[in-house]
Image 1 (cartoon, helix red, strand yellow):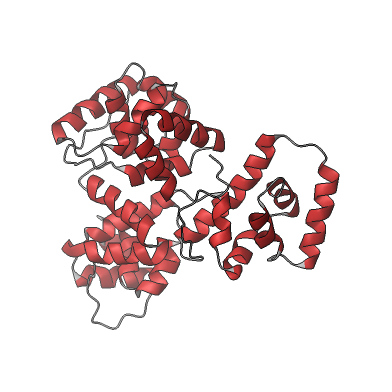
Image 2 (spheres, rainbow, N blue to C red):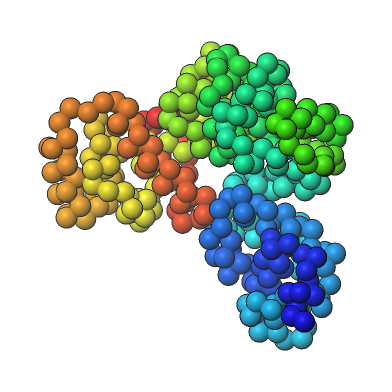
Length: 342
C-alpha cells in the first residue's frame, strides 16, 4: 500500500502543508507564491495546526510525492511561528500580518464557507434587510476579493455603514457567529453542519485589503463618503493604500520592474495629464523603443475619457501593489498625497 493510501485521513491541502514544512523558508516561499491568496491561506492554516502530525507521517508523504530526499530524521515543523515566517517571506510583513489575523480568527472553523461558491449578487440578496454590523461580520469572514465584490454592490449609505463596522469590529462570540451563519445557510438552502468555534477580528487592515480589490469607482466613492462621515478613518485607509503618485517614491529599478509588464497603450493613457514628476520617472525608466511606442500610442488615441485614464493608472497601481506584496519592490510613503486615484 502506498504512503498516500496510508495517509488517507489527510486532505490534499494538509499534504501540501506537510511538504512545505520540510523546505527551507526561501524555497517554501517561492512555492507558496504559485498559489492563489485563498489557497495560500488554507495551506498556512494547516501549517499552523501541524504540531499534531508525527514525523513518520511526514516521511510517508514526502516519499509518496518524491518532493524531498528522505534522510530518516524528518520532523513535523509546523505551528504558528512557521506559518507566520513563511507568509512574511512570501508576501512581506504588512500583508502577512493581515493574513495571519484572518487565519487566527478562522482557524477554529469557517462558518460561512458555504458562501465561497455563491455569486456576490446572491450573497447581497441573502443579506438584504440585515443590519450593517451583521453584513460586516459576514464580509470579514469572506476572502477580500469576494468581499469587495459584495461591498461594491451595496447601496449608499449602507455600504458606508458596513465599511465603518468592519473597521471598528472587535470580536464576536461563537454563539452570535453561529446564529448568523445558520440563518444565512437556511436562506441559501444549504445543508452544511455549522462550525461554531471562531473569533472574528476586523480592523482597518482587512478593510484596506477589501478596498484594494475593488474597482476604481468603488474605491473613490467609499473614500469620498468617508471624508464626510469619518475623516480620520478615511485618512487612515488612504495612508495604507498604494496610489499612482507613489511611483515617484520607488527606486529606478523598482519602477522598471513595475512598468515592464504594462503595454505601451496603457502607459500612454496613464501618462495623460500626469504630474511632471510622475511622468518623468516613468519615461526615464522605459527603453527608447518603448518610449517611442508610448508616444505613438498617445498620438493615435486622440480624445479619451477620464475613466480610461483612471483605469490605466489603476493597472499600474495593481502592479505596484502586487510587486510590493511579494517583496519584489520596496515602497516607502511620504506625507503628501501625490496624484491619488481617489
